[in-house]
Figure 1 (tube, rainbow, N blue to C red):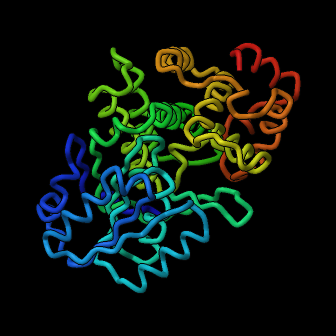
Figure 2: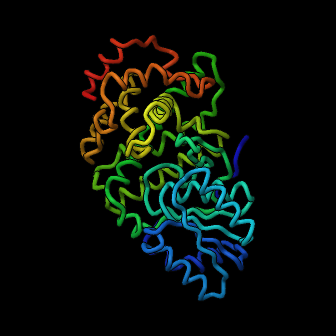
Length: 348
């Protein structure tokens, strides 16, 4: 199933101040709007969005997202049914956007994505991650945002950790693209080369930057553009395949075997990407490691709150996740000694 693409993208400074005008320029007709956020993001700029809309005689309902889980999703859908908005705006990080995206998709409402961080490619993708009652993250394929608005002044206020996580999630596309092409070469799948190349392009763009200052306008524009390309690729493909391969299988295995760790998704897949690219003998690996060093990206297993033996177990069990998706994990013979050898070689 192919998802529709977002209709517009806006990246620049001070975008939240002119949001009402921006939406009107896009010929969106709305009298009632729901704004999703959390306690921090409403203080950061969500309240300004609400006040601006109300000053234009728009009826606004705030919805506070406490977590990206089934409980919050059900509450959001109930509030959407009660308020019946013309438009839903998600203003926040991954948790806020996932709940806003999934609930608006389920209720067939227009959704505008306004990220306050660039920590993963969910800002423009058709995938929302919602945790089960057992705290296991599950991916839901839904409608992507109608529009994406990235205010760089807001993004710069986020902790650098979140920007680094976005880099990790974006660079994981290099591993995923390799796996997709590997599956095709083995006759296991027919891929959309255009979608795969689009996801890969965003990662290559950031590798090729001359300046790795992570809070500069240039770096953030390329990062935002790359994450959006990744989301577009998933829309075109009809699944997360262009941006999710062996590295995401390892991430799913980590979440299942060791849930509840304080690790961002982009950090987790970014570290897994070093391992999978080494296993692939991916020619882009040295470039990824160079960028990681330059931005002080966490590159050790201890950051994931696991040890080497636990990581070996995670990798060996990763093939059980998304079994229909052929990757280097299925192509290679893996055992304890080989996995530990790779860990030692790349200094995980």
